[in-house]
Amino acid sequence: PVYKSFRGWKEKTSDVRRFRDLPPRAQAYVRAVERLLHTNVWMVSVGARRDQTLAVPRG
Image (cartoon, rainbow, N blue to C red):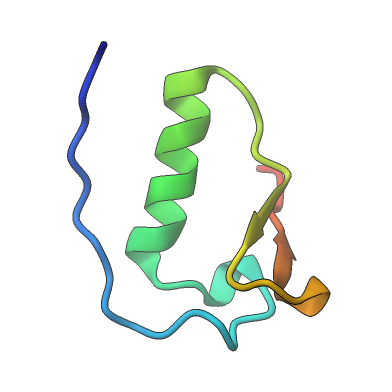
């Protein structure tokens, strides 16, 4: 296995409704997952409710 460490974020994300409004470190984490897994992440969730699912933009 390959272990990677990432710096976290302390900002609350459950009220975020757009990917671009996530903390920069959260965005960087999602982009790193994409690079490491050689795939696109299309959605991320910041909570259990349907409106807490964010689309991840391309490019």
